[in-house]
Length: 131
Length: 180
Image 1 (cartoon, each protein chain N blue to C red):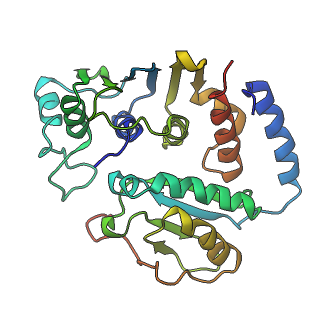
Image 2: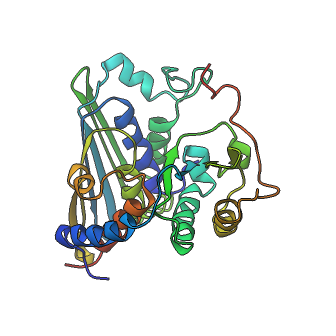
């Protein structure tokens, strides 16, 4: 891969955006939030983040997904943690989400709309939730 | 706790974001023997007392996590540089901003691995906020040299939170690691 210029980036964006404009994504947004505090990063959250991006791309869902990094969700013992908010599914925080789980996670939760067994850790610890 | 040099970088830039900076500058100069990183922001800054406290692992302002009693970002970095004979400097002025400089020498046994620099740059660019971030990265021997402006990139790509934008951002930043 050669060094991309800003002009090439702009051209690439234009061609992608035209593809996207044809699809209807209104109100179907999926939010994925990856815990990237010190605990998360130590457990490999960066690798998980990259693997999720690749898996979403592989499943052709990049126009429907918003991905964010956040700090520690208070579940340091099951890092890396990933929260998913999407229409038609309960909001879930998954734990122990190492990079090798990323593809299974995207397939199960985002594509097949079923929960990922053995990784569900409900909600953030009490001291993290805003009162 | 932190594994790579890039993990420290993420922590330090996060501080700048949380200090309400509108401009964050990151300079990364890598050679075969060392990696030197400078992070400068125009955030709220600290006076001398606050600065000393910030280097104490058992001090936190309690804003981010009200019930925690530790603040480990800067102390971890200071410790890592000290134990590997690296350099660590911090300057701050109340109301003006903060500058953190650190350097690790690759021949020291206790120096952490460098880590994934372009990956870390993508992460810091994605940190939320309206700030401008100017990044310059140089690895002379490998012929790598580039500059990134967050506002310029978001002007082209829109919000980096959108997965399609993020993928383009990733490909763009990764491609900059190619030789000129």
